[in-house]
Amino acid sequence: MTSIELSNTKTTFKELAGLVQPDSLKVIRLTNVSIAGDDSDEFDFARAIRGHPSLEEVRITNVTFEDDSVTMDSVAEMMLVSCHELHTLVLDNVPCRARSCATLAYCETLTTLALPNNSFNDIDAKMIADSVESNESVTSVDLSGNKISDVGCKSLRLCLEKNKTITEIKLTGNSISGSESNMLSTKLQTRTAIAA
Image (cartoon, rainbow, N blue to C red; front, top):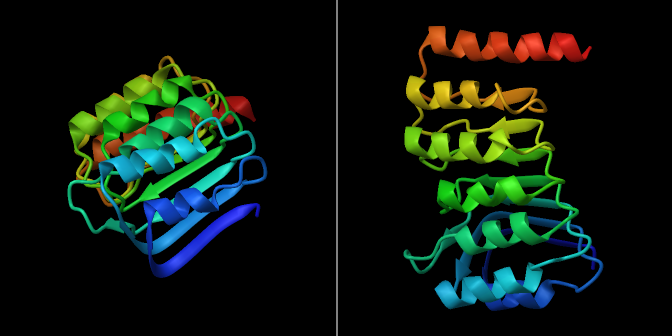
């Protein structure tokens, strides 16, 4: 099995862990899925994908947990630290904390990081900016539909002073003024023009 694709269903972390093939899994896509299990079950799923040699793409959208205290933090951290073929990570409207993505600094293959609709604020945006600042593989960051203001936008713009690979930052659906948004757009457009 090269992919785990579930939508509009219920499952458990144990079932998900059981679907992980040791060598062939390339894609995980979960959409509108309710997952049962506690923190230790989530960690068991994280361990199942730890160091996976072929996992390239993870898209988790509109996932809820039956236990309100559970987050996707361990899974995100484990993938970013140990899956050395991972190039796309999408966590859209998924209970997770921005700090779990701070391990992005250790992921040398990720090109797309999308964390829309997760209620991230300016502090979260700064954590993500700090993590991508030294990353040399990410080209696209999507933080659309969060709770980011000019302060968070500025953090992302300033991270571009050190990061030379990002060509796209999406911030639609946040509370960002036109002037701050324009400064970010100008910075990205200048970079894209130079690359061309």
